[in-house]
Image (spheres, one colour):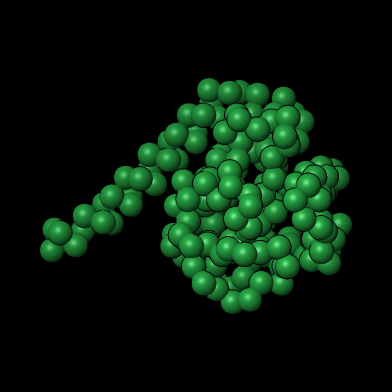
Length: 181
């Protein structure tokens, strides 16, 4: 019986450690905060995502729809968007897109090149994971491309595992990852 509890205990301690680390990192840097999306952040949400997408790939129809109309394509469907502010300037973004009753897709994660190296991507990822748990999700899913090596490393660090999922609507997607919450 005790041996079967060890993996759950390890996962629990791991989650607490990373949550406390994220809180500590935010508190160590009072200039950094993660806030809920408001309409005033739509231009930054779009610009941050366009910046990385057009650097590596091309904008696709789904990108234009969700970035131009996040209310219609993310928020009104039960999703959430979080914005990282550094000294009150939007420097990062990440969305939780509702996929099923008990699952979300972590998507549209972006950090401005001028703000990289401050742990903002990690904090956004941890924030999305914690929010998904609070929303009752038992799975978190994402799609990416392996050319984005720092992003893939971050997803592994956050606890995502590679899976073979359903076909992606994005041409650029060549890896899918998931985490049980």
